[in-house]
Length: 343
Image (tube, rainbow, N blue to C red; front, side, top):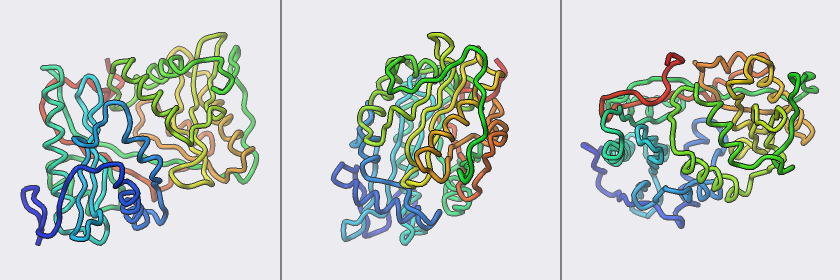
């Protein structure tokens, strides 16, 4: 029996998730990941860190579906932390053995209903949307979005490079030197300012409260056991932050791959080769640590041409990890998120 109108089939129950559920939810998500990618992508500790982010409420922002034995078979999160509240993001999956029963449809219907709270908080004239992503080759998930009135709007790549030889030599632009965060020459507020300035020209960017964003970054840094300040590279022009490469020691649960999480150059320092230099510097650091690969995520239609930069550095898309973004409009209005480089 399939669910209709967002209702679960007989024999299943739904409720908010709690921290005690996370080990079992992690295993369920990894069951899905193994089917899609052949690897585990999730770790319970990182789930817990994310779910304890400032402003996130598991009671209102998560939904867990269990079978008759109490086993998790579906799970969704709704992320609505932006101020202004104009874009809501969803994340989750259905256990592969329980696909086709309507569980995903019930979860997505709940997510849409939950997302409408953003409309009440958004500026009166603003357009409000809900967005989700899925693997390009996950036909069930793609069809689920389409059946619920979502439209495909974007593609994202994972780009990788093998570190089987020494990284290409790099040259810093005149007047630039690089430090790492562990040296305590810059503070987190400086980095957050640089991230905001670097990403103003990126698709989906929304100008939000600096204080709220800083609070989320503080949580991200202080509560994540994987954080390594010596892998956060900061390019300085005298005492000004010109660019950043914020790296993490692994990609998901893949210990052999270093991850460039945030690479950005502030507007005033672009077109001088700084982005390439930061990237090559990151490759070198990972090579010295014995990593076999480095990866990062990128908008396939990057407004700033990021894919060309990564290709110049020797990276290539991994087609297995292409993600497609789907969007549904909750309320029409003025678009406050970045969609083009036009003013």
